[in-house]
Image 1 (tube, rainbow, N blue to C red):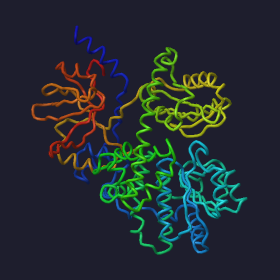
Image 2: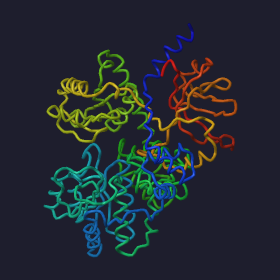
Image 3: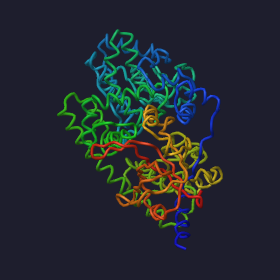
Length: 583
């Protein structure tokens, strides 16, 4: 009876996630690559799944070099952009570097400003106020440029849809160079130059650069044209890596090269500002993409969420450790405030949902509280999506309207759903998985109902259950130092090059499992009499009764190194657990 109760409780818990095993690719292609590289067939399968299906591609994948970077002049309008900057410098014009208030925008501004400051003193930067000006190019920013005599604005991580704002700047005699990576509309703004690999007439071979990556290509092009050693720009790759990680762009192609060298720079010799943030985070070495996402990125973002993103740029361009530490401490305080707002609002939102049976039963979450801090509603929307795993919108009062941040689940087009509710909205924008919107407060009830109707009729039930994508099934005995040494060379991991998740069946605990930190599962497992692995399962403490019952179970997991008391060993990071009764 006790085991039946365990199975029932466990099944409810485990069914929150679907295990999806990836289909095996062309077996002949996998075998050919395995023989060419003399590696395990599972590793060959992982490579083929990433589009690495030849010896030459594998060489480039495992040994990225800066020579793999594309010619920046292959980007449409790059020649115009460089020529305009050369003219501005030659004529002693005032140049304004303009960027968005998030991590990608502030790292972009820091990179471009720091580089051109070496060659031109009449240069400054501008970050719009999140609350007063909103996202992208603002009329206030253009007015600021006009009032202070700026005749050239280099816009980073924004501007590709700012048609009316660019027209306004043109009418005031201000030229724009737009460096953006977002998808353009049907009409491009009438800027002096528009750098965006996603514009339809741009033949640049890699389309997924971050905004900071576009800024890097600009200074790369300027350096090539003006015989500046490229080694002089590689010092900015740590900023590029931080932008790649925080903006969640694919870690493939040119981004993978930039991220690989950027992480090396970050770990070996970071700029003063990033070094300060790393120290303040309590972590100083072996930073990965994931570490950047959870430690550096939130701190930089906190400046614009809670106060002014100019603090982040001033930190990132700091030239001394003393200034960097001072600026870093300010940002660290803002990050603490951000976390407090985040925690409080998340608790309030969860309580709001829990108190309303209708909200619990819906396929969407739409919540509103006029007192919530606008700077963190996007984070709260992500938290609620993790909890209930359905399209989610969190709104608060801003400038007399309800302002919201929306998040989706994997596979569902949030932007299309919002489009069907556009008559109830003042404005909205974003993409498939994240968006922002504003509406009149009196429209909130009607919007809640319409959004629920639209999503309910268009989302398959399976998309409302979070999936774990499993790359391959393996025996624990196949995990040895050579296997992991090659697997580690798949790094840096990130979107479209995620850490592989493996499946192993019929494993047992060796000794007793336990919980740590109240909710995390810690155990040693075996699959045969010789192979043992220590495991950690974050947030999986509820599985402890089942694990200690002595029955076999399946696990899916990533493989990582764990260092304890100066001893490093392989560890399995458990993502899911199931038995035959719950499969």
